[in-house]
Length: 431
Image 1 (tube, one colour):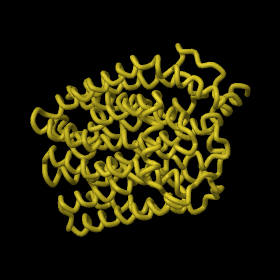
Image 2 (cartoon, rainbow, N blue to C red):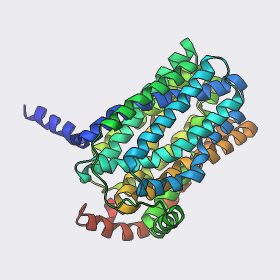
Image 3 (cartoon, rainbow, N blue to C red):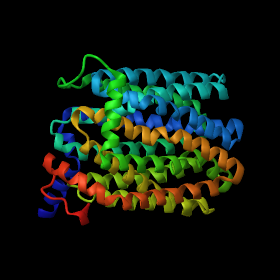
Image 4 (cartoon, helix red, strand yellow):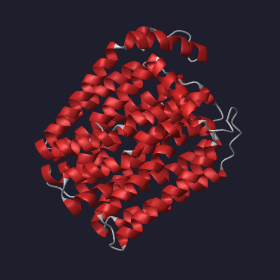
């Protein structure tokens, strides 16, 4: 009985952010919508490669969908700090639903072309550039207890990677049975879940919302703040380097699935699902963490794990071994990114959180288009395996650079955490 009660308490602790009604609504609606998002991403990659057989065009389409983040994400952070995040998020979700519906219509009626995929990818990229910083900075507004922020971010990662596990697997089967268009249609319908959830929320009015956007002054203020504070600066740099060099493995997956492992859409779905399962385990681990102690060590260790697994996967020609390596890759990836996100949102001042999250998304999603484009070009010339190996090595070097910056990070982060009441003292050996 005592062990059962202890186990129940542990589960409640891991799910403590669910005490907030708004967060429960968000989790349910967004979770279903993300399944559709992952189905669309896999179907888009497979459709492009089936139509063209070109790794270069895979990189170009990936670039088109991610490039808008470079221009619009920093501005989106100002919007998230100065406007009503709740209403802005609803508006952006509706527009994203229309984009998915247009993609489904063109594909199901056999009117889809590479050019239309390119244009719709740009549209989605612009919407995502505004939606992601708004959604991530909105998490704190949904919580009844602000100290649950760390847990909520980890549960968001769990939700994202649960969808990443389920979505690609469903997409692989759906593509084989009915084609790519059905995946795009499901994604369009799935947006209704998150829109309804957002409409049902009761969000208290946020203090400090500016009636004027003042985009340029607000952007300059955010840049000075983020670059002037070493812990935020170096976390953003690490995320940017890992995203640039390591994350393009997602774009190259069809090449490995079809040409190097001799599979089809189901093989692609299983590989992506294995990565999602690893990320799921990483998210559960982070959700069980009680405090921010050990953040820096987790960032470094998981970044190195991510890089090593990418290198090993690049040279694997065994499907079972590739699944294991994709599992470990997902584990390292999500532990790095979710821990970095938690550190940034915990450190950021309340009136600058949207902009700091915007810079995080810029470091993550803004460098991905450049990485996708570069990976496509390099893979076209020297092959996907060597390209992935170079990316993994860069991730390891980025983690090493972060390690050498730990003294200045520890010096500046400790008083902030004490001021927030998160810890009384943060021993350097535990950071």
